Length: 136
View: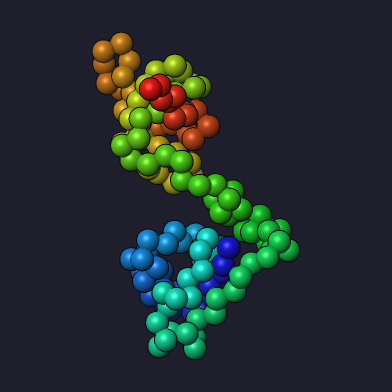
């Protein structure tokens, strides 16, 4: 886990660069800081390296991340993506199948669910669904 520190303007530039390289950026409540899982140093141009500080976060920093309310996001991997089939395991549509149509923030997904021949769109939390078992 790495923290990137700079001015808000430079952080925005870095975020655009890293997003373009496919790195997942985690926002914090402090605009001068963003977090990334992988080392971003090789993607930051030399012209920005003097004003952008990259810090590797060790175990002692997890308390800070928890306080910043991003620890859960940092540790979880993206298990569900748009187009993935899912099985609803809780809620009104328990035991029905669906397809993720949209990934939203805070662990919410817009899911198209097949209910007795009808298609229902609902917003489902990550805790209410699982990937279906694949049989060969």
